[in-house]
Length: 477
Ligand SMILES: Cc1cc2nc3c(=O)[nH]c(=O)nc-3n(C[C@H](O)[C@H](O)[C@H](O)COP(=O)(O)O)c2cc1C
Image 1 (cartoon, rainbow, N blue to C red):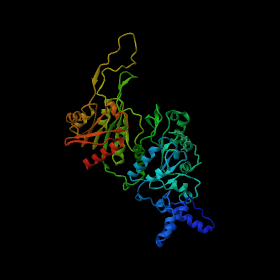
Image 2 (image 1 turned 90 degrees about the vertical axis):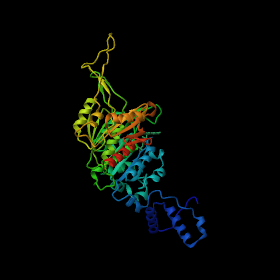
Image 3 (image 1 turned 180 degrees about the horizontal axis):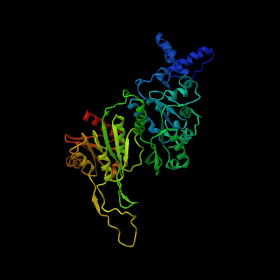
């Protein structure tokens, strides 16, 4: 049956039918098919074969919409997907949000539907997918004002340059932008665009405008873009990063009884992240390729688990994790001083890639290039932060965890590091160039403890962080 036209039924009946269809999330035609099939089934009528089965609901029944499937206290997230190449990652984002106990409704712009289909999003979201401002059925059933009002947070991921501009200027010419104007809950944007678009003064003006309106931002990150040969700042933050940011924004506004696990409440966690910069002279330094992503992900996961988190960070280009106290440092010696000042802590996790050596006599003026021989760089050893803290007799954190970034004999080196440094756990990872771990988004960890070695699967740095914080919570419980 190709289509079904309903004629000659009075307005009252039409309204009833429309209501029933809206409630069950079907089109009116499918609602009629459902009624006819039910009647035929009841009477064992042979006409059943003639009635095409109805399509699955395009949006959830309104009873579900009013009361999401997740627990009543679960955060209600309205995810707006706009038309960027990173839209495919939004499907994973839906999963990541739901993993954290959130109920997710999705709104898609017209352009977003060029990249992912509403059907794919509907298969993952539990709160339905909405695309049209001028759609009688969905507007009648839920409507843009209700979508805005019923959300605990609106997350826009990816947020295109175009959508950012519309938000910055208060336009409301489609469902997504109308919701943005009607929303009084927190808003989190995950910008994603080509680095040239991101750097453009107009985009930067728009970012400044929305920031002044207390809109939260996550990313964009720096790295390779989807376009061949393009790299720079403009990559959408990873789904896990966005999900964590959304939950963290909601957390202060929610009670401890919320569904977010608080396994580390009343615990203090000290974390180091990023590289250190060791000066050669006032303008030059020795550094390494650490991005800080792993340490920042751990800080976010610990904060989400309810811990009081201090993050001592080397120079990185990452958004600050919400709810985390950040102390910024440059050199290894500054990092050690900041760590010692931040103690006591229940747990210390040293994820920073601290330079082993520094220049013994850094120039106080810029070293000039001259005809003479090249200046010798005499190196001297930096303090060992992990070992210093792990060997403290007073005020040693209950659990001291270090990272071992190795390029060969990963496990053997990690085992000897565990013994040498006096720490409780070592998270060993292979940072050879071909693994892409340094600066990348994924990691493969071997957890080395006095009890033995546990191999974790290759996973995102956010998932590593979650796994680590879960293990930490179990250990110090
Ligand atoms: C293949 C392709 C990829 C695109 N990727 C992006 C992107 O990553 N970021 C962006 O800001 N715009 C991107 N655009 C342009 C947007 O789709 C365009 O500005 C559109 O009007 C955005 O509409 P929306 O903001 O309503 O979703 C892309 C366009 C195409 C054709």
